[in-house]
Image (cartoon, rainbow, N blue to C red; front, side, top):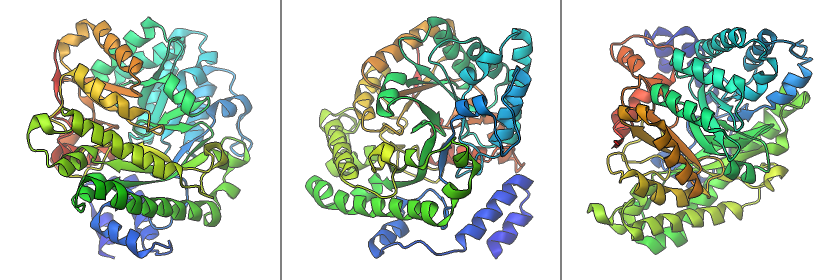
Length: 497
């Protein structure tokens, strides 16, 4: 009861944030999931974490609607006819977004925006105004920067207008990714880099890797999560590998005993959470997104997440000196790969009634970006902040891990403002990274107000307001402040020319 009253009385939460927080309190008052004793033991230690999804999951965590189908057919449920001009197109999408849930209660994916809007770009001046108002509306109403849009891979007029508006507005929502492949023009790639150096987006996705993994159309959602269009993820449960490694006698004990045990706990817990959504919540039986073909239960899976691989490796090797640590030592990096391969084997060997047929009834690995409360637990497979090597060594170290994480992994690089005069140099780096099978590449500049935290975006000026005790529009600002304070997320190595 005290928690509820504290939420109601808070002077740091907006009305919408209070409503969401009160809903979470109601959900968490229930105790209906069947969790075995060993899993509960790891949960209480904070080693297994469900990322505050709640005790009675009543909607999938991540939803990736088929917006192309919506644009073609409209929606009977919403009473929307297919759009005939740019204003109807943006209006229809904004209406639909209000009805796309997720773990945040707001959409984590708003579509391949340039492809959705390109057919309606007739007059570029008018289209630019419509797109700018559209993006401003998203930022002001979807007040959570886990909301994510895509552009590319092909250059479009709409894509260039979106980048122009992103640079002008400098807003953290929606997050944005350029799908990059051999069809992507130099023009839009350079324009994307110029925009990212001002407003920390878009990131670059290795389109071939994602398209191969998802057998065609996919969306980059939330932080950098790759998921199947028309599907999504029912749940995400993660392991804190750094903390877990402290219970191991040695490397062999960790690989042969501890990892198999905890992986079974996580996979069973993913199944239990997914089971409730599928069999008890009635989401798939009642939601119009399913009924109108925008979602398909068979294209949903569960995400098995990890954080703290670097700390795990360093703990197992008792590595103190820089040259012996993850990110520098060949032995340490090879152990990191060995751990990830073992996890992949364990996840692939688990057949689930609660993972869709598209995924052959299996859950998939995810390199999770961390939480604002994480201390001494680096995001996913990343090198700890402050220990990063030079950029080319960093890429060569990181890239081999990316093939194991179809549902998301990525690195963030901070560039000195002098790169604004030479964006081609960054594009050359990205091309080299993708040739080495890096999956996802994010960048921003030292003088940006909008910055990338662990995968999502915040404004430094908004964090400053929060520190003064003022309410802020986006709840992710609170997470960003925590990640800055606890995880040094804004202290990454500066890349200079």
